[in-house]
Length: 262
Image (cartoon, rainbow, N blue to C red; front, side):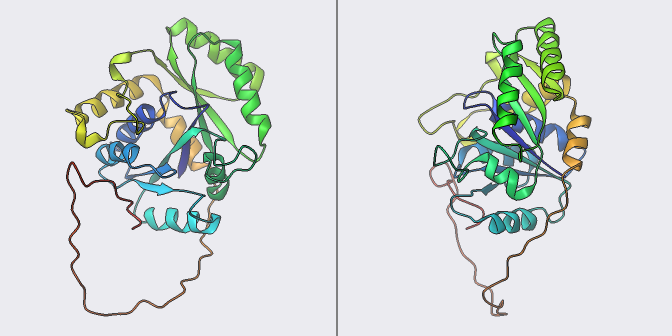
């Protein structure tokens, strides 16, 4: 099972929502977290939430087959993959092709996408956003929508109805605006989990908000609809059975920007 949580752009609440979903699902499932792109900070929250090291999937550094191979290796023994996108769904290194984008990872993994929208001051215009994102690339399976920063239940219901009736796309939840649960931003994007006091406390709060706001059972059903994929990577050398060597790696407040693949 796998699901991609993508945004219409940056600052729509992807990391807060993704981490909350990971934590909530971890109560029932062994969750493997992933992050699209070269990011160290978001994965630090994923890892705390799931107790599994978050992996990066990057179509700039990796070909499609390598993305699948990395994904499949990380999924051994896991129940469900929750993949947080980067910036907007279609943002990559180029304004025309998919390289480096969340969309490219969705294609490589044949993964359904849940689109996260900042719905502040939007109702019918939210439906226009969904229509545009679906029309831009029909190969992307936008299977559901999460509305973030809704004003109240009435706002949520009106926007949900508009999206579902106009776009025929399911809205699986809505989260009421609350600045108290947002993550402090800085020049790198977010403050690493190691540098934020009470990170686990915040993650627990996000998880409770998610459980009260999003249909997690439906999200899991959508994740389960992803087709089986295989790796076509052939090793270029045989594994040699030699004596193991211990390698020391510094890991603290200063040295913590590492990719698990390395």
